[in-house]
Length: 503
Image (cartoon, rainbow, N blue to C red):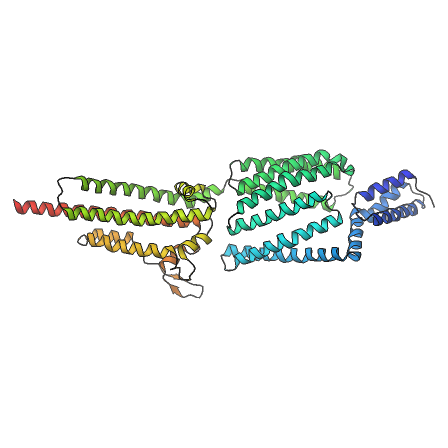
């Protein structure tokens, strides 16, 4: 049998080392096995290079890794348990999250518990077990520090996403710490480990470019989620660096000597394609147009309410300071109308402040600023908190503050109508402005129900609930101004009659 030289054996050892075999005894056995196979092929009269290439095609790096995985599975009970746990809970958690996402989109009950359970299994069981298996198989080369940071950053990121979806307090903090841990600690640590790997000497430049681009891309994603300025440029720079710089360099160095198209190359290309599509959709500033559809009506309603309030204030001030008007009852009625209207609008304003404060987890001062500029509101699509505040915890929604608004609107309506009972036109406008009758809706069973609270605030997102409240404030100002004008017209008409009688 033709013997291998020491140089030939070194080449085989280097090739086996690329497979990251962690078991030293298994590594030695594999080296000995490959040496024997190569020598057998060389016995047929072919060179070492051709014999080695033939054996490599039969075994390959993936084949060596599979041998180690099978060996671990047979001799290590903990590894066997963790790998089964990883597979089972990975499948279960993703299935539950998928179903929960469907329920969330369809607004079906049970979406919240499903999402919480799915993300908990994913972050608390699957992710740690997957990292343990990867460390055991040496798929992620590096020190214990890398695995520790991976667990911390990954779990914080997973639960940050859950908290963001469920609108729980602390979501932004979890995402910020998770992204920072991954981007500023984990990726540099992995990069350093790769740069120290002697087998990846020709890929150092690609790894550096890829790591920097990935950090920039993760920063852009965080900025997009947190609605920080500069998200789109960071996403574009990161995506361009990964797809147009890192990807070509990596492909040229890894696959340049490939004699045929490898499956791994096809998957890499498909992955890059979907990555670019996701980056484009994430970076596009299309959300502003969608949000404007919800924000602009509320802004215009608020402007109208402000104009009406100014008119009412001017008219009431003009009447109250007019020394020629001696009718004290008339002036008391004017003051009473203004007081009742202001009380209701202030009550609704306090609910708006509470709504935004709880939705975004901020204090009342910040909430007042965001009410004036709704574009600053972060959780515009939150509907759990608005429902909790406005509908309470009963099925009919009458335990929340919407029911209190309705009662106060009806009380104001009765009071204003009593001040202008002789003015049919004013009474009609007040009735329409302060209408609390609900349109007929139908349940899933086809049964009609008429409930003002439910029809206005059930499954309504925060920005729409805010618009509704602004709408009620505007209508109060319409009824207020109409009542003041009616009182003024009535007073002037009566005063004119008195003058005529006197003459």
